[in-house]
Length: 294
Ligand code: COA
Ligand code: MG
Image (cartoon, protein in one colour):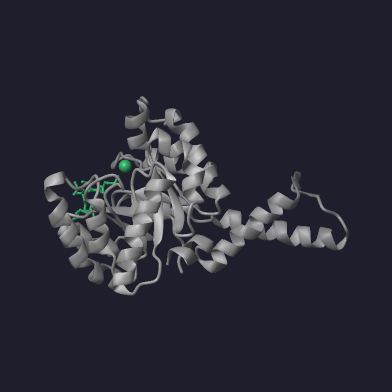
């Protein structure tokens, strides 16, 4: 089990990138057959990913494949080709509703039966207006769904948003996806930050997502990996504070008090619970999502 903070996309038609991907420090890889692969290359990319999967999973990474959308003609064949031992699961783009998710689960179950595999996980991407409005139903539809990914750029296209660097136009949807995932007890995965050379922008965007409850993020370039890993790891200060909160609260409880003041701030049950979860995450190296995704 390991911490899952960064999910790195790797275009499925680029052998060099696929070979290099396991060495780049990302917590998980998403080998992509969807939008980074042009339509004329769909079939060669599918074959390449299927062929390289044993080598990639052999390097001990958590690996997902992003297949084409449930509504596309490529999806069932993608699934049949990439479901193999060692794969953590599928990333599904443009999930709009529970019905299309169920159709994919049926194809997936068939491929698993053919290979004698246990049920794989699903990361469902919501990135259309309808997908966002159905986010909770999608997140809660099936125990295979272990993560809900927020797709900002496709949402902007679908909902005719005007994209800005501050991403204020995405705020409501981005927060809704995080809440939907948390309500269903699964992991929300934050938007891609598309500028490859803007580290300050990446930092701001990652911290804004973290403030909304995202502790995992999609990344697209090796340079983004260490920055996001660092920002989404519990900091030394957070860990020290969590330890102090738990110690002070344990003492207060012994004295029969449920709320205390620590450093001039009120500490009560939700704050103690947050501190407890943070330390648990550190100890377990990833928490419940890592357990179910691996
Ligand atoms: N995965 C693995 N390796 C990657 C990578 C990725 N996502 N992005 C870049 N690299 C590698 C390059 O192959 C290059 O390797 P080399 O030094 O051995 O030649 C090195 O990292 C530096 O890359 P760089 O030259 O800075 O970038 P680029 O111009 O080759 O690629 C992108 C830029 C945007 C095309 C590329 O990062 C990419 O394809 N990202 C993923 C896009 C994607 O999957 N989108 C769909 C989801 S939103
Ligand atoms: Mg997308």
